[in-house]
Structure formats: C-alpha cells, structure tokens
Length: 526
Image (cartoon, rainbow, N blue to C red; front, side):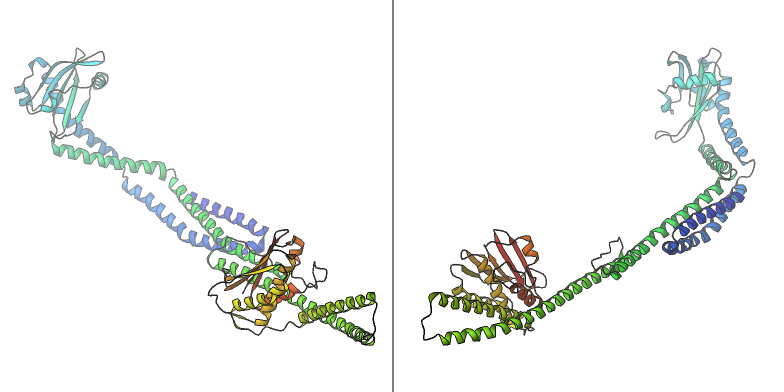
C-alpha cells in the first residue's frame, strides 16, 4: 500500500512538472488546454485512486482469508489417500497371486479383477506371456500396454494409471503394475466405483483452485504486484485523460486561433484570406461563416472600387464631352459661314476636298462627344418584363444593312423565360457587342447571335455573340472593360465599359473568351 501511494505521488508530480513547462513555454495559447487537462485529471483520479485502493485491499484480505494454512496439504493428502485406497486391491492381488500361471477366470471373479496380464519389454516392443480377462471386460481382450508405460514401470518400480470411461463401459478402470523378479511386469485392471471417481475429481478441482489462489498470492500480493498494477491502471487512465483533453482542446483552440489569425489579416486589409482548418460541427460552421463573410466583403469592396473608378471615369467623360462640344460649336459655325459665303462661287478642288475632310472629322468628333456624354450619364435601368428574342431580332435587323459583306445569323432559343430588363439598354448592349464582332471580322465571315436557356446557377437567359475574326491577346482581354482602353484607331474605349455597366445594373454576368487569329465569344447571362 505504501508503494502504491508513493508511486501515485511520483506520477502526479511528473505529470504536473511536464504540464508546468508546457504552460511556461506559451502561457496564452495553452491556458485553456491546461484547464481542460486538469479538469479531466480530476474527473479520472478522484474516483479511480480510492477505488483501486479499496479493490486492492479487498483482494489482499480476501486471499488471506481464503488461503488458510494447511488446506493445500490436506487436499493433497486426500488425493493420495484416495489413490492408495484404489490401488490396494490390485497390489494385493499381484502380491498374493504372483505366479501368473495360476490365474484363471474363476480367480479374477473371486478377487473382483476384470483383467490381468504378464508382459516383458524386448527391444522396442512389448511381449505378452500371459493375458486373461473376464467375458464382460471386452475392452481388454486385445489391449496391450505401450512400451513407454512398461519402461516407466521398470524405472519407477511402481505405477498406476486410470483409464476414463468410454462409450462401451461407463465405468473408469484402474490399472496397477508390479515389477517381478525376472524384470517382467504384471498388471491387474479393475473398475473404480463412480462415487470414488466423483470424490477424487472434486478434491482435484478444489486443489487446483487452491493452487491458483496460492500462485496469485505468492506472485501478485506478496510481491506487491497488485499495487503495481493499481499504479499502472491509475497512470494509464491519467494519460488517457490527458490525451483526450489534448484532442478536445486542439479541436477547440486550433479553429479559434486560425480565426484570430484570419481576423488579424482582415484588420490589416487582406480580404482574400481563407481560414483552413480541420474543424468539425459548430466550429466548422463558424469557420465557413467567417470565410463566407470575408469573401462577401472582398466582393463588395471590389464592386465599390469598381463603382468608384467608374464614377471617376464618368466624371472624366463628362468633362471631355463638355470640352469637345465647346470646341466644336465655334468650328461648326465658322465652317457653315464659310460655306454660305462661297456658295455661289466655284471653289478649287483642293479647297472643296479639305472642307469635306473637315466636315467628316467634325461629325466624328460629334459622335465621340455623344458617346462620352452617354457614358457619363448612364441612367439607371427602367426594368420591365422583356422578351430577349424580340430585342435580339430587332437589333440584328437594324444592323444588317450597315454590316457590308459580314453576315449576321441568329439561333433563337425556344420558350425562353421573360427577364426583368431595360429595353433600350439591352438594345445598346447588343449593338455594342455585335458592332465589335462585325468590325473584328474585317468585312468577311459570319457573326452568330444565339439565345438559349442559361445553365449558370441563378441565371435564366443567355445571349451569345461569336465571330471568327482576328481575336484578342492576353493583354487586351485583361483590359477589355477598362474605360478609354481601345485598340481601334478611332475608338473611344467606352463601348465595352458601357456594356459591363449595363450587365452589372441588371444583376447579370458577362464572359469573354478569345484567341488570337481564331475569333471571340461573348456570353451575357441575365
């Protein structure tokens, strides 16, 4: 018991020291873990230590009460007494009738012997000189002792064996051997009463139990192994509780620490952060909610920045449109006065051509000013339930005459759902996209306009414009929707910026795929 208490104290001191150093290493991050570990240890040790102490005491005292000195010797003496009493009949028969030539069936019946025989060990085999048995003992008619048995009899000078009952005879048989003067062996076999066998088995069973208890007492109790097992049990449960508390604390603290790190990065302005952890249950829901929040914040910030940039570009467009119109007005008035002054006079061809070129450039500048002005205004859409197929057909029919040798074909989807959209803005969107496709085709090829049911989640209708023109490189694709970015000699770079603004105002998405020399595919999902 003293050893038990000493080892329990030593184990607790070692565990406490180990966790103290862990706590010293990182006090903030291990505080919760230490509390949880201490709680688990208390839950395990408070009931386990006294319970193991009581059980070990009960086992020790019980063994002392059960193993009364002298019981083992008494049981062993009882077995020897039963064996001696059973052997007496055979030994008396072999001692009195030591001449096997006098044996007869009548003699066996008289002495209550079932079989008798005289044998000699020669080489590796047994030779039978004489054998006799009662008619009722059929199991001994062809029975011969084994050479090993005869050899043991010759060595120990006295041996007896018991043959258990079989199916033919439900009685056990005792065989008693005796070594004769001429180094031969005589034996006598007879039945053992059932009550004697039962008594012998009961005594053997009791002796076996007593021997087992004695072994337990000697090896476990007297050598204090019972207390060592108790210490191992307590220490094992303590280690199991520590491992369990560590697993649970990691499942709680790791997601929290990951969330703290993620929030710190969000506070620094990094909204692209995603927390990756092996959290489960409610903590997994918390982590996923945090990731969804940062993703939504990042999306909102991108939209806000884009809206701010667009507002800035619209302000620039408004100023440019104003300045162009201010300059165009006096130029147009002067040009008209010049035309009126020389209306009745013949101008030189060179002067007439110059005037025509100036007028064309003025018209181009007026168109550019109009485009800047439209981009600057960009009114909010007035949505109504709209059939996109009719809008597409209307725009294509109006544009066909101005497309020259470029063909425009339509693949109109059947039974498209109606969408909430502004008709005029949809026309403007389609006009800009188709116009770009026609210009990229360089007066040859075909532009295909397709409408279909959209397979993108949250969308219902898709408009696709595909051409086989010159295509775009990576740089052009990256800057495609940036205002004032253009690869055309007379372009303003506002067409696709207006398209993107219309798509965003309608809550849709636009996708552009292009490869240099193979054409472009524009998809608008509403």
